[in-house]
Amino acid sequence: MTDARVWIVTDGKAGDEAQCIGVADALQCGWELRQVAPRAPWRWLMPWGDIDPRDAPSRPGSPIAPPFPDIAIASGRRAVAYLRRIKRDSGDRTFTVFLKDPRIGTKAADLIWVAEHDELRGENVLVTATAPHRFSQERLSAARRDPLPDIAALPHPRVAVLVGGDSRHYRFNDTDITRFLAGIERLQAEGAHMMITGSRRTPQPLHDAIARFGRDPRHLMWDGSGENPLLQYLANADAVVATADSSNMIGEALASGRALHVFHPSGGHRKFDQFLEALARLDLVHPFPGPLKTITYDPIDSTPRIAAAIQWRYAAHKSRIG
Image (cartoon, rainbow, N blue to C red):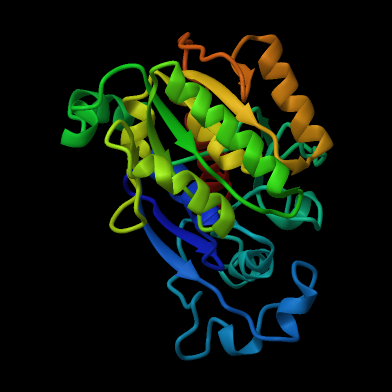
């Protein structure tokens, strides 16, 4: 599909953009990032309302000004109206894709992807176990062949530690931080060498608590400068620890093919918890704190499947419009 032009439409949230970019990269298409920033009151009504009038395709500086792309991939509730407008103003020529539940039903896009723990279903809804991401098997293999020097110098077992933070469904209270630290200290006592990366959502008390491990020469911790080494961490880990507040992190970890240990902070999401429980029954997910597992398995990676569905449906769409 190298001849197709692709737009990625989001409001700039890192997680949404990462999913869209991962799918676009899997399509092997050139893509352009189109960020939207609707003003009040239009953003208050999203995803149900219309776009901000100043962003109309005919207006100077519009983020969705023509020529319209062959395919538009969007994510995030503020992008829903913009995706609909692209579809309308392109005369139905742009094939539209939305990642995650758009909250307005199946007519929001030509193809919608949701994870199994979401409820939306329909003829044009693709459901997979995990979320799309940028860490293709090719990129992971390349990172294993050529690890960063500080990772190559790190003894085994190496454990990638993916630290999230507060979200709509989860909160890290003092007890959670104490439990998480106890698990990290247990790994250290068992001789593990950790490669730690945090998130923009990581609360300061949690960040400060884990930072002391990053100052220990037996471990590595991303300091927030430059590119996040998460790909390298996952590719070169013998096991992974991830917090349960991010489905993106879980999907990225499962693509590594390494044993995943999941920490549950306060709160939760019933359907996502059920998904993790199903993975635990398959011996793919293990509790954290808990004994370190270093089993391997065939990577679970939904991104190629999502890209294949887009290719197939886009071909049918292209044939229909002529």
